[in-house]
Length: 394
Image 1 (cartoon, rainbow, N blue to C red):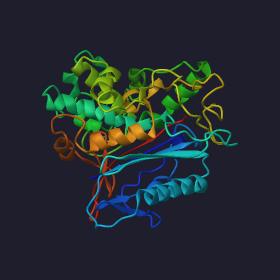
Image 2 (spheres, rainbow, N blue to C red):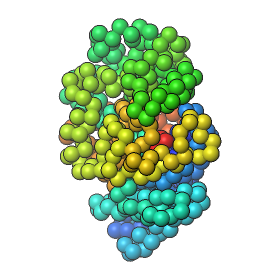
Image 3 (cartoon, helix red, strand yellow):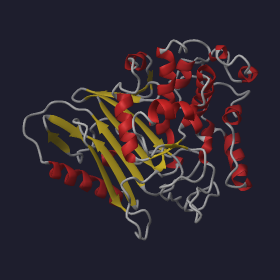
Image 4 (cartoon, rainbow, N blue to C red):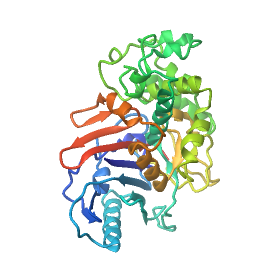
């Protein structure tokens, strides 16, 4: 299994894709200790069609690759040659895509962790990029909700096929969602509920524009974001299509909290952050976090945000708590690599859960499938790729 993760301080409008297969001839293939590592840093940075919510912003970049691999011969390059080749790939990428700096983290098959900070924190290059630079994780945080839901499934406390109304008996507002009485956790976690994505809903965008003007602490609750889908038609009946939905993941978060009796961030800290040594991963519940690097908005920013998203006081200029179970974490390259290796490698929980993920896959496109917080694709030569992208302003 191979897992690829990418995190950027680029805004959601940039819509960078995941690289899930070795399709770029510039990718180096590194052989070490009978193992093959496919480095896809450049392909991870290839631009894609634009989306809504925030116009494109540029800043430091965090690329993470955690990989297991296949046997391939007895002789390979030295550790220094591997280090130099990866460093060149990251340096070439920040030059090609005009960002001031990047951090790449790689876990080799033997467990050795390598971190590659390249470039600077700022355009004038007054400060070099630190290895432990913290950025916002964007939708890579959906894997934590997926893992929490799976922990409840393997414990027999949550059934993916049961309508969520059974877990939210007091949520009378479910009747205002299209097919709200029929939607299941399987639909929500696989993006097959038919609920629209709140960043694409015009009323939500208008409300966010107004909210930004109220001040940096203003935010919406998860239910307020969900309410933008009230009394609106579904994109399709549940289970009959695929459409990526942050709204669905917020709703799934309410179900997980109601079922577990534990707050989302508390459960993630207890089950995953502490046991796996994710020392730089923190919940997005405040505008200040030690080690957060600057994010930069581009000239097409239409949301009224300043070009630098960390203010002179060291705080984000907006409230990041809105993401919650749709993302919701500050993190860094090393932590993303560790958690990606654990979740994709079947080590996040004591009991088997990968079989549940593989039994609950939705077709995203002709290459990718989505399954409970993971994007999966298969290649004849290198097997399964396990991934999730994340983008967000700041």
